[in-house]
Image (tube, rainbow over all chains, first blue to last red; front, side, top):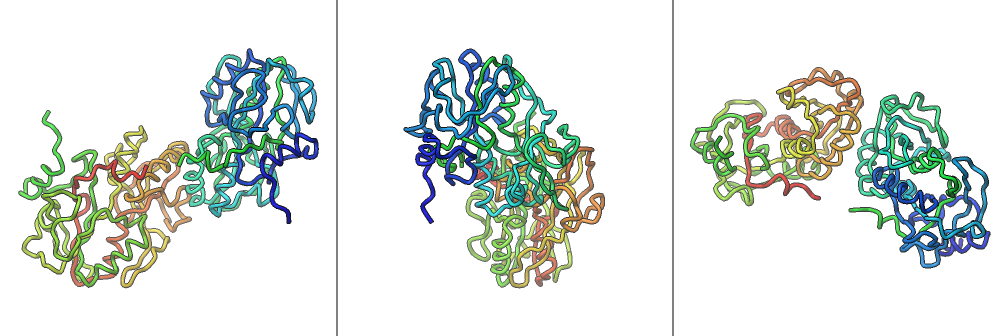
Length: 262
Length: 262
């Protein structure tokens, strides 16, 4: 068995076109991030939206200047134009294409945001011996639209999207403790128990991802989700923007443990 | 309005017989403790029981030697023989009397234990803006026997006793975070939701204290309770022991904030 890839090695493979798929399971121990790339005249409002809604929109990296292709701390070789396995292109809130490289469409007008993702805290939960149902069932995490309003900022607004993981109460309490240590990857859950209390009509009808089994004695535990900022962008309909394709994240040099506040 | 009493001033009033009632609401900001006084040949096993069951039996002070009447850190003037407003005397597990001073029955054979109490974390919850139902309804906290077995130590054994406070999920999550900072006053809850899952047949039938209202959308949240070690002592039936009377605690010089690990 060969040694696992370092983040820099994986990024090199992505850059060369050798790796074009999802990044789940790669580079254990390192932060993976959601991507949002917006025109400069939308960036300030988006930054404010993230600042006002840190649980669903935790910023783990942001380009220092419009046009910058590297982000301090993500990796010396990091280039946002080539290092995401798959990009989605959007015009006026509509998906217009999916590509593996954005070098030819990059402009000095674009501002890159990297937003925390649940992979970081899931790793900490697994290390503590907790079962994560979507992983043990080999599915995507179930995600739902809610009636929990985000605080609006300029043209960005919308409700929070949440992910759900079922736990027995004793494990949910431990999960809350562990996730509280990771505020920059969504932090503590926002709700547990009755789905209707946050506007979810049917726990078996997901809005994104897959549904998972909830056993007797377990409660659904709901965590703010990084799909929230994407949903807000789609609703704001900027003339042009770029995101990662689902599951195809930026793999960074940041150790997950560095996101733990304690 | 006169200045609130310091712990030392309250202890002086208790010592002089001026204050003989409960200590709830006195000396805000300072740790109050449960009392257990056992003969020397029972003390080592009781200490082990507390060590094995730190959530229900968190030791905040212990006499350095049998017969010691002061405990390091509790207060320079502290005297266990006179500074508890009301004591309960027990023989072979049976209550035999209630007194305000144990000076005349004190022996060099007795070992004092002070055990953390929920007042400390309740203060932190109130300061954070959470409602504590038993306080807002002017009742004692509801407490229940459970089927959660303590780890036995010598002659000490039994199931955990828990206190219950109802919260909406978002407040329960915050409560779990705050209580996690206070491991020496029972720490994070041990359960929430279905009472039957921990052996409580009817949430409206308390085993100690009073029942409280649980509103729609709220879940009962269960915390390990300092009644647990008392129940274990009663079950072990030492030939003689002394406890505080319910609500009549030792008021210490320890700031509650010093019990917070973070």
